[in-house]
Each structure stands twice: as C-alpha cells, then as structure tokens.
Image (cartoon, rainbow, N blue to C red):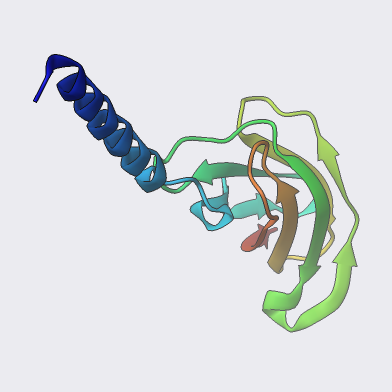
Length: 135
C-alpha cells in the first residue's frame, strides 16, 4: 500500500468513525424535560405565588427561556375540575424558574397545568402538577 492510499484509508476510517459518533449522539427529546413545583404547599388566598422549575431530567439542570403558552389552575385533585382560578405569569427571579400569581380561594388540592416550548427543541412539553393550598 502506498503512502497516499494509506492516508486515504485513514481519512475514510476517520470520516466513518465521525459519522457513527454523530449519529449516536443523543438529541434531547421533549420527554427529557419536566416542570417541578418549587413548593408543594402554598398559602391560600388571592395573590398566591406558585413557582415551578423547568428541568432537563438528564442533567438535573434548570432550563431558562422556555415560552409558556398555556396555564390553568383548577381543583381537580379534590374532584372539582370546573373550579378554575385566575392565573397570570410573573417575571422570573432566577433562570429556569417560572412564577405565577393565582387566586387560590379555597384550601385543598389544586392542579397546575402548563404547556411550553423549549428553545431549540421540537414538540411541546405539557405537565400537570398537584399542589396544596393551606389556610
């Protein structure tokens, strides 16, 4: 084998190895992310602050800059899914933490439903989180 054909063979082997490595590199899937409540017990009342952290489950790191487009809070855990409270987004105090102000008018179980898009990922993350409003 000549030197030039050995070089070509080495380049071809390197290209094949890089192709396999690129194909086997795991891309994130939307199921690799989840919202987690910062606190599960929230003081009942108008102006209750509910905070959630968006987490990459593979690394445990918070994910900033998601676009949250769907929010709903209701009393489904206590069998009152039609009891819905107003909820509005608040500015974040730290990257990856998303805060909301809600009117938790009754003590008991509440379900927070969120829908969001994550920068650079395809698909939509949807989570339903259960919290408790305490007197």
